[in-house]
Structure formats: C-alpha cells, structure tokens
Length: 397
Image 1 (cartoon, rainbow, N blue to C red):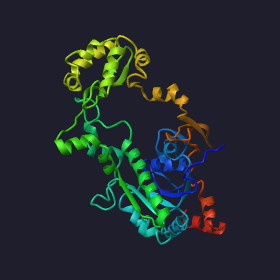
Image 2 (image 1 turned 60 degrees about the vertical axis):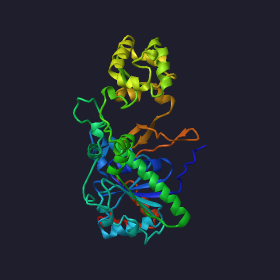
Image 3 (image 1 turned 30 degrees about the vertical axis):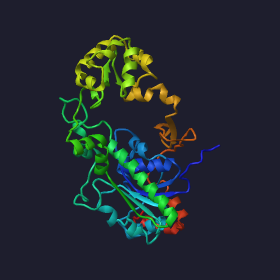
Image 4 (image 1 turned 90 degrees about the horizontal axis):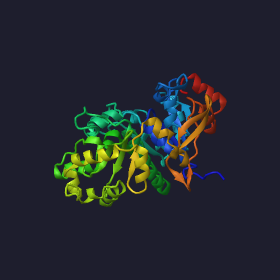
C-alpha cells in the first residue's frame, strides 16, 4: 500500500535558486506537495551549473541534492507575458515561495500585495539574505557571510586556530527549514479564513537565532563563549573528542550519571571520586588534566573497542570522515540511503528524508531537467498548444 502523504493536494510555486530555498521546499515536495520550480529560460537555477560533478552539461549532481520530487517550468517573470502566466498559475496555487534578494520579490510581483488580486488565499514566503524592509534589502548574501557576522567562526575550531566556519552550509539549511514552518503555519490559517499573507525569513536572523544559549549568556551575564580544545562543550566535561589507538571518538558525559558510568565501564572507578573530578564544576576547572588522563586510557585500544564497551551506556560516537559516514552500515539498517532513476543515471544514490511517516521513509524521485514540465503545467492551467507556442516565441518560457 502506498504511503499517504500529508501535503498531497497542495500546490507550491517557487522562484528559487541555489540552496536555502530549494532545501526547504524539497521537504514540502517529499511530504506530498506539488512543488513547481519557476526557473529563468535558458539558464535555470544557478545550482544546475555548480560542479564538479555533472550528469550532463548544465545538470549537476549538486542540483539533485535540493530538488528531489519537484517539477520545473521555465518562465521569465520580467516579461508581461510571464507575469500573466504567474497570475494564472497562482490562482490555483496555495503558496508562492522565493529566495531572491530582498528588493526583488516586490519588483517581480511575488508578494501578497501583488498576487492576492488573483488569489486572496495565497501565502507568499520570502527567504532573503537580510530581509525586505531594511537598509540591507539590496545586499546579496550567502551562508558563509552569515556564519561570519553571527559569530560562528569564533565558536568553531581550536582556540589557537584562525576563525573557522562550519564545514557545511547549515545556515542555509536551517533557514530553509524555518521558512517551511512559517509557510505551513500560514497555510493552516489561510485554509481556515481564506486569506493569505507574506511570511519572511532571512539568513542573518536565522543564524543569530541559532546562537541560542551563548547569546543568552552574553545578553544577560556578559559571558562571551569562545572556542574550546577538542571541540569540547563550553561548560560540560568530559564532552569532547578523545584520541584512541587508531583515531578519534567523541564522548559526551553530559549528565553526572554518565561520568560515573564512564569511569566504571573503562575500569577506572577511582576517577569518579578523585577530588579534581568529583563534581561538574571540578571537572570543568580541571579539564586539561582530565583530557590527558582519558587520552592515556583511550590510546591503549582502537576506537571499535571503546564503542563496543560504551555504546548504549554512555553517549559516544566515532569521528568519521564523509566517506565513512555514508558507508556506515547503520544507514542501511535505518534506510537513510536510497536511489532514484534519472534520465542519465538509472540508480542515482540520494539521501532519504529524515522524516518518517508511520515508520516509512518518504518517497523520492529525481530532480527535474530544466523546464521538463513547462508544457504540461501550462496545459493543466488551460493553455492551448498555440498559446504555449506564442509564449515560447515571445521568450516568456
């Protein structure tokens, strides 16, 4: 029996590109919504050209990362004919999403004020770098810039290292996720009252919100959180990386009980009663000495030995590289990896969505080729073949 998806029947138009917006709308598509990408004719989403790996010229593996389960149409929103098509499609849509520069949505008529004349219930979600209503609205911006300005580079890496960003574009991903929360909330309201609205989220606001407790500590106590050795937690220890006989592992004795269990499991119950390590405050004050002692213990055996000894008793994980992370047999057991059929690769490997419904992973299909669905979407909207040919001749699609 096929899985019933909760967003089936919802239609989302998205003038999206690159990472943050497409990441968020892919969740909607995987949960059953019909997500129609609106892409500029001829060039499409800039992510299609991001190397180094391509399925065909202009169709990157990178693009597949963020656009599973979607449809693609080409539409020039700067042309009058393109605007007419947009309004016709919006009349039967539930939402319109964009992740354009802050000053562009109003110019392209992607706001509630612009589209509500065609559909009063339309929800218009805007994901920009800095927002649409301030002095930075015209500024372009990307994830790494937000990490820099929001203080992330002062929190990542060892204390004596240069300012260091996170290895992934996590600000993009969390902003796309937050956007979908706002959008879904507004869709519930629109379904109840028949009136849509604008929903705004910007990268810098999302990045700052993720500062969480270090921000609260600074705002209320003047405490500036800095970097710690071994990627350690700022206030709890042992909660950090440790050397093993053949690599590294991360141990997180976040709760006092885990410290006692750790000492027992590694055969050193004396450490739990050592005055230097007796309380959380004692352990934090003597973090360096404790690190030396635990390194000496863990270096005696390989990582696998310690994982087998500690797993299920103390929070612990191996420190993997990307290849080891993906080749981990546990991912097969949890069905986190899947394949989709693409015209250029019959078994393109993909990461499955982390959400499960009734225990099942969400279904996937390959991201669309540029404009693959243009004609069909327009026919569904009532355009005749000669109308579509006219739009193509005018350069609108």
